Amino acid sequence: MCCECFNQFTKTRTRLGVFTQDLAQELDVTSRAMDLVLSYAREGPHGDINISNNDARSVMGRLGLSGDKSLRKVGELSGGEKARVALSMFCLKASNVLMLDEPSNHLDVECIEALADALSDWGNKDGAIIVVSHDRSFCEAVGFTHVGTVKNGKVTIEERDLAPRDWEQYDIKSKSAMEGNVSRSINGSSGGSSSNGSVTTNDKELTPEEKEEQKLRRKMKYNAPKRISKLEELIEKAELKIANYDEEMMKFGDDVGKLVDINKKKEEEQERVMEYMEEWEELETLLAEDD
Image (tube, rainbow, N blue to C red):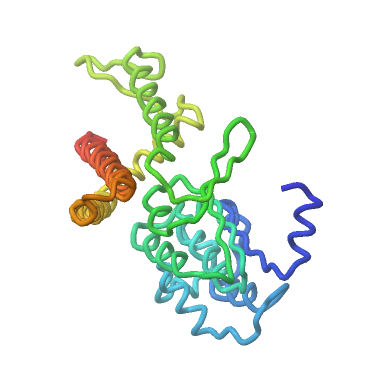
């Protein structure tokens, strides 16, 4: 978005809330988590002085900062807990357009699900959400009306739901990077061989991109059981739709136009089932791998 367009955008009644990956690193480490959340929610543009301590505690608790964690100094919290503090600040600020950059980073599965549930019910016709994320299960849980694809420095926006193909290029990149790590280790260029012939690797010689790929793969493996459970639900729903389409085709047996339309929808659902099954198999393989 160019500067002029952004200025026009913000001059409207839009209340823009922005959550970035590095927001947690900018927190005052000498302040208590609760104090930071309250001051941010009450002060500045669109602040609300009526937000109470209980309001802040409730939001922080849902994001995993229950008990005395909300009263600790930020410097005493882990990286993941700092991210939850930043997300609590973001959640309490009144906004009608939310922009989130990798919001599920540093959150555990339960927190990710809670955040996705909250965002899926947020806004209705009076608000909008823009999310940049590589977390497939999070994005599918939120649900979107438009999909933006970044390629060669340009963004293409389509009005549609997420589709399995949206993740193919990213998945291929992740897999190829991981295969490259294994290949390089076996060739001995980033590790050494022990006396019994086994191969070792040296994380210090990995590039930042390769380390990020390994981190992502570990996260995918950690989230795999939840994702598999979600895939089971998606497959069940898709198969139910296919059965309903079969019934409709029996009902409109003489209407060629209707039959063509219904059959097209049925084939789309069948394709979804195949893609879900393929992803399921990939996750099962990932779970079976040794760390």
